[in-house]
View 1: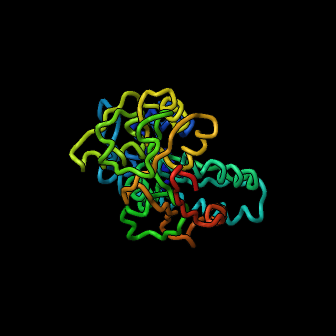
View 2 (view 1 turned 90 degrees about the vertical axis):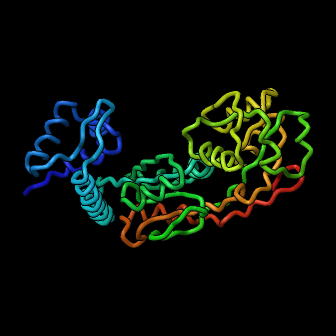
View 3 (view 1 turned 180 degrees about the horizontal axis):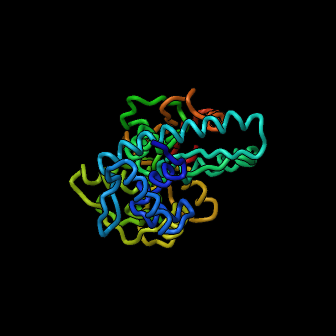
Length: 307
């Protein structure tokens, strides 16, 4: 039984996209070609790999088994390319990173950009997910490196510290809360908020704590990033919850108040996680070392929320 690497990659992309159309686009194939490849693979194996629905496709039990093997095979190919890349020019490596919202928005852009500038043959696929989803992606081999909060269960993964992240309340100028040295999340549950999109990892994290308190936050508006959120807050529309680093950046040009949340869950250590560090391709290990290079930052806040 012969397997084509293109077919294996296509199956992974179809599973990630949730549709053959989406997988075909990511694989740069026509829909007809992608459908024919999957159909031919199913005929060769004698078993259905995907269940078709009006909304898309989901892997069958046999499909999930194939995907697990495909990830391992393609990982070995990436490792081989990485090793050979030390000797042969022109081979490109791809590192897949799954990250929570804060790391993706606040810490990774500069670090990843600098790494790519020094490694022209490497590409990085970065995807935002909640911390539990990041761990699952790394465990299943769908991501090489994950960036998550350390409160999540990390059994079966190797981890190294990355950064610390404190969540703060940002307030309009002159707001009654702006003079506070700190505030508990329970004390702002009745307030109106500007938030991130409901599907973002940080929004799910914050809303989850509100639900555990038996409440639901009232959002007047949801915006796609921290900078836009802080700009809306500065107009006097409502409060916001953002990482301290984002609040400081916005406060350089906007009149906003910064009040640290004092709840234990608001101060989180971010960690890098992977299945086996030594099993990563050369360029993925180099990226991991690059991300570890700066010292772990312990964020302390004073009355004005400065470090």
